[in-house]
Amino acid sequence: MHHEQKKAFPTDFLWGSASAAYQVEGAWDEDGKGPSMWDSFTKIPGKTFKGTNGDVAVDHYHRYKEDIALMAKQGLKAYRFSISWPRIYPQGKGEVNEAGLVFYDQLIDELIANQIEPVLTLYHWDAPQALADEYGAWESREMIEDFNQYCITLYKRYGDRVKYWVSLNEQNYNSNHAFITAMHPPGVHDRKRFYEANHIAFLANAKAIESFRQYVPNGKIGPSFAYSPSYPASSQPRDMLAYENAEEFQNNWWLDTYCLGHYPQVALRYLQEHDLAPTFEEGDIELLTKGIPDFVGVNYYQTITYEFNPIDGVAEGKMNTTGQKGSNEDTGRPGLYKTTPNGHLETSNWDWAIDPIGLRIGLRRITSRYGLPVFITENGLGEFDKLEADGSIQDDYRIDYLRSHLEQCREAIADGVDLIGYCSWSFTDLLSWLNGYQKRYGFVYINRDEDSEKDMRRIPKKSYYWYQQVIESNGEQL
Ligand code: BGP
Image (cartoon, rainbow, N blue to C red; front, top):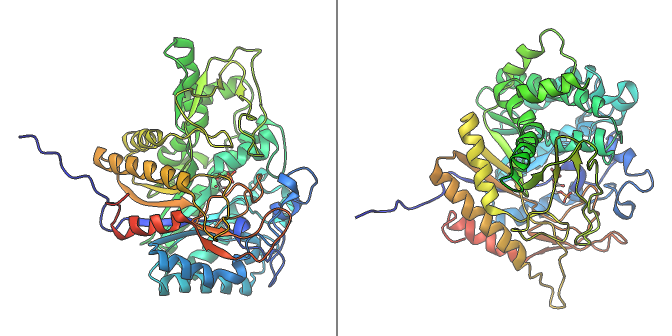
């Protein structure tokens, strides 16, 4: 008789949840912290939803003990957070700010005291404004060594207690918005500068990993990639070609370079032909091959479907940052591809396709192509939540989202994916870079909105208790 093997999560699976410094900490100018590029950018009128910024955020800087107590009560096994570079180096380099290091000492120690594995992100977009002023941050190769020195400081300080490290968070998504859509700092529309800055970020990532080997030899490190696996809109060959183009330019451009140490050939050739290719200097190729990670960090929210886009076709379309369903516009590169809604999938109010099987597909693609372990460093649903009169938040839609994605993780593990952990986005509600506070992701509701900080009370949602029993049963009870 055929006996199906029981599908299960490994016993040491890291059941986690995530955040990022700028989105939770607040205390933007306290204890010697210097300004980041986001501190400046969010103050420019019209850049963020209702002019929101992270000056106070959800006040995690002052309330981290309360937040960690809630993590411990939930049974969380891992917490992914990021370090604010200008809290450590207010000027980006040079003199180190001891008070900044002490804050993260305390955070890490508190996590460990509660048996929660710290997962430390070195860079989640908040580069020091001083380096932007001095040499244009990611547009200069000086960034590589300054980032390396900052990382070495953290390796030396926390390497004894932190085993899991994320190098760059969503280099792809961040540089796309920084240099193409102009929605992230420095707010530029220039594809050539995009490829140049992105190349420098690859080198910085590789350099940081090379140093990691020396200072934290027993640790594990990898970048977190914003992974939206591509689908073709149809089996028409020209849609298939558009899908291949998108996969190459939107995904493999990063994944291959991280994991294989070189750019995908056809895409590189196209960029050379169009005077868009990044500038290679001597030693670049060698450095990239030294940056092969221990795992691929995956931030998964959705798949994206592509179709043929003529040479005079669609370019940048507007992105839904209001939660008004249906307001997202298609976006593309003329002659290569354009996005199109996938009629088979439901979407969130921010028009993100909900596709749990897409996660399984993505995990398998990474496994087969690179043979590396995977760590899901973000996955979650941003939605409007309602604080009921009885003080509860009934976020069943979020439970459905997370459950269906975890079911596909279990399938992927059975398929042979070496999945070491899963961090939901996010633990508490927090500031969305472009969508304010109304697009909520947390297990824990924060009582504040765009108009008022209110009391910032922490209230566990229904999903908090659901995840609690998921962890307790090691994923058997989803
Ligand atoms: C990722 C970022 C996170 C987080 C998340 C949700 O791109 O790494 O920092 O913001 O997406 O995105 P959003 O807040 O735009 O809904």
